[in-house]
Image 1 (cartoon, helix red, strand yellow):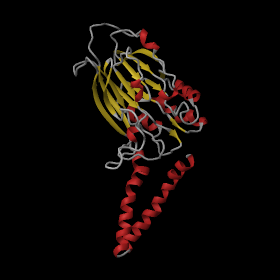
Image 2 (spheres, helix red, strand yellow):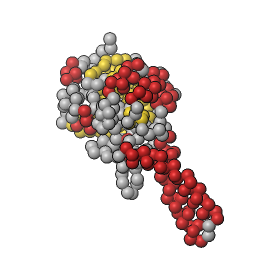
Image 3 (cartoon, one colour):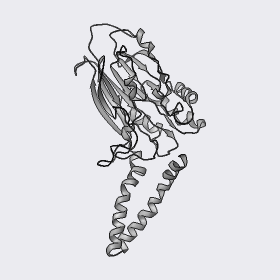
Image 4 (cartoon, rainbow, N blue to C red):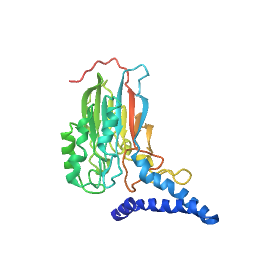
Length: 315
């Protein structure tokens, strides 16, 4: 499988001599030969775009989210959410340094990283690959994803945790951290990767009332497993890539999005009421070194917090 991925990655460079041959046929050919060359070139252009152009684009998507009980007049925090950088096998993935610079330009109050930092990297490269996270101008909260913990691939938990620690990140696996973001008391909680089967939500029993709770995880299907007694206000996740390669009229997406959560904001009805889940489409790639109609993206979210009469401040 790895051989096929690398063959696609590097074999795609054959497009350039193929395109030149087609152009020669268009310019010098006649009749049917010229038409065939034009058709062949036209059909190859979307593949070239998906391999060489779109993966290197980096969009910023801005959205306003009203938490339950909030209004546009309520206090707000401005956060950046990104996930799935998948640094490793595919050199056309957006480097972390570029992501950090783009986030810093947005002037956000906090940054959330929704896992899958890696995709079959060399473990010795991890410190350098993620050193730029230390340059973020806002506090970073992070969790790991399935590719980081060995589902599939090598378990890179230890070197990634060291890299995140050195960058000053708060890793919130199966725990909660009460903090202040933009002058507002917020609880940032987290869940380890769903596929690892080590999620533990016992920490929620000791959370104070009246403080908005953000739950960060990798796989949005975690929403289906969170205990009904855990009342969070907003879940942030990644994992789906938004399908990564979306072919309208043929397939909705190439990567499997098996649960009800695809991309963007979802309102999920659980037995304990409506829950909000926002899924970022990621900046990197798995399976194929391509993105089509789903460019790399950072989500910048203005989150209005619920108004409450309960006065509480973080330590």
